[in-house]
Length: 465
Image 1 (cartoon, one colour):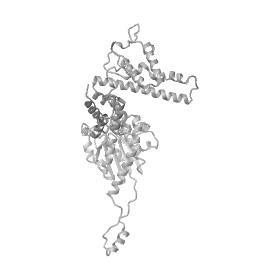
Image 2 (cartoon, rainbow, N blue to C red):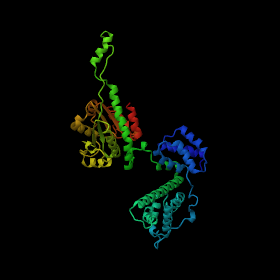
Image 3 (tube, helix red, strand yellow):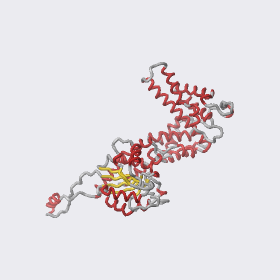
Image 4 (cartoon, rainbow, N blue to C red):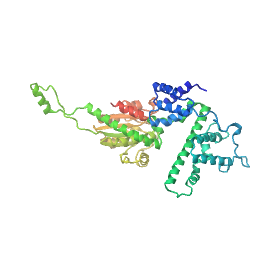
């Protein structure tokens, strides 16, 4: 058993590795908070840690998962759980195979017990039942690890909903407010049971394989550090909310660069009038204020399979940017290039836009494999007028061209025509220039930034200042 100091240092290190910003000072604050609580009170210990190291509500699920691993509520089978020779023996059929759960009287007894717990809402008893259920059904003979699926498949808690509703409605009219409230309550309790089973499975795996390894596999990074390539549909909805303020900031940064870089035209009348006070010598020159300018944007996005998940983020960013720029034109390419601006109707779903783009856009020339050189050439031939001195050019892709042509002179002319040009690369910087990557060759023409999550996108925007 590790000492409390080892547990603390390991827990804080795991939080940092998972992406939570925990400073040394906050780690020391947690130690001081532990002195003010009863260490045997696990709830108080959790609250003390959370108060000192958790800064955002989005970080709380990650914190809770890691806390349960580093400070488990039980060890081994847990107090009161069945173990060893006391574990119930599953009913076997005439051929020696296990009886299906639906016909196993022991499983049916457990389901009835679980139903009573859902009706009572006793969370402590439900937690203990989850430990027992994992001990009984979480690992079948011949398996080396633990799985939630075995428990949920045996007990099928979601199939208890009809019986639960019948028990509480007691003949009331169905479909009314009472049923909706009861259904929501039991759905939450079933979800809670599934969470407890998953937590217990993680705890047992941690005891078998080590807490550090289990923590790395069990915890997803917080949203701001989530790799765009691993984002699911729910993550994309959350990312969209976070991208909008970043898009506003990006637009303002580009306007500031323009405003700081160029003054307005000379105001001849004000300059001459001011020179009268110095005998006609124009000691001070006056300029007309620049007209407010909302920059134009061209987005050129790699839509090949190697960066398909990153392309989802590209669409998110383009959706957000179109409201901040006076004109946004978006183009996608694989080995050919096509304009995809029409798919960005206000209120459109990003996933639906991706589906339409894949079905309708002309992105394939011959092979359907990335060919940056030919895609750049097609863009210059068909859409040369898209880039003007008012345009900011944003390229998004991994710069991997399958050893094909690169069309560097054409890209240089595009960059020269644009007001600004930037390249966001979703690959880790350590992989640039490996294999067929031409990151440095393109980076010599267009400033290239690693951009795999919201944190790096925010850093890129700050660097524009």
